[in-house]
Length: 117
Image 1 (spheres, rainbow, N blue to C red):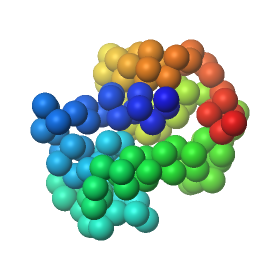
Image 2: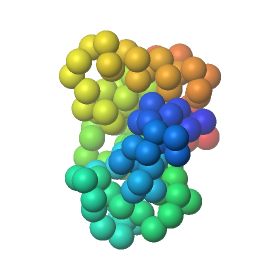
Image 3: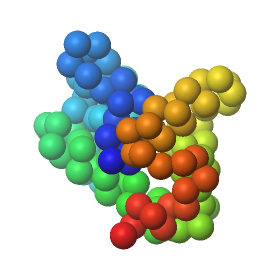
């Protein structure tokens, strides 16, 4: 559900025709080992399934502390979102957080270890 929350917050939807949708990149990933290239400064995937897999893989790595982001199992959902979005505008960060919380059905202070089980 975490990946679905991120996907929704990133605006991945066919009716919107966002860059995330056009690039088969529901997580708005900038790069990924699974990408076939880049378009509009975002990773480009061969299809939606590969893009969703890449998002899930990226989130799993972050939740386990296996990235350079300084996130790990004891980090919170809010910590993840702050790093993931690199958003600096407080209201936009709060809106993003609320979308992910609602869809993932967890509190903002939920430890990322919750998502690794």
